[in-house]
Image (cartoon, rainbow, N blue to C red; front, side, top):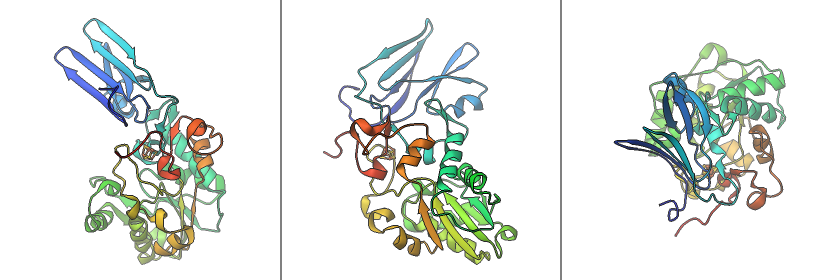
Length: 307
Ligand code: SF4
């Protein structure tokens, strides 16, 4: 299968006598090996090991198959693709803050994104806040680096799903309202720097900015801890087609107006690479990839996409 299937996947397969982990030859999706007592564990994120009291051993390599059976554990290394292409969006949004991916702590990388973001279009404000949950570390990093106090302005209902992957416009609007509510005392009369991890359709950002204004915010300055998402993902992530991606249609000023913010700024791709501890040599793609896929930001896909 691995010779024939082109794309990203991470598999955990069970048979009566075996547990098998498979990571795609591009290493796009994470897959890790853990231990619990005498047992081995396979999961896409190390936070799953912590949840059951286990520990992370290591990440599987791109193209690696790990077979765990009664007699022990063995690994088969199938030919990996030239260069690894780990999904940088895992660090930006998908992964949980307490996971370690390819040796890099997700929380720490997000704090660094916020620190680097604070240098882009600095603004005078009363407080820095993040959109829960994935943007909170970036907001903390932003506050640390800028010296503007960190406060929480949005409370998250932990029983709601992720809006990014919710289908349908009306659904999404309702789920933003269900998911977040403003903490009025921290919002009223304040100039707020609001950090989010990304803008996909732009609608969520608009609802959130409106929600804060209704709660009395004096100014809302959106800061995004990743570059503009201009291209669709073809590797299993449910981003919309380019037609629906806000940054594919509007420049930063136009998008700022659409989401009704006082100002808008994004983290640059070089800084994103820096935050996850990789070097991006030259243009996006090819040899300059730095071991990451960042195609949704730069349009340079690590493999042929479509039919
Ligand atoms: S296109 Fe974006 S979301 Fe998809 S795998 Fe690449 S970096 Fe990740």
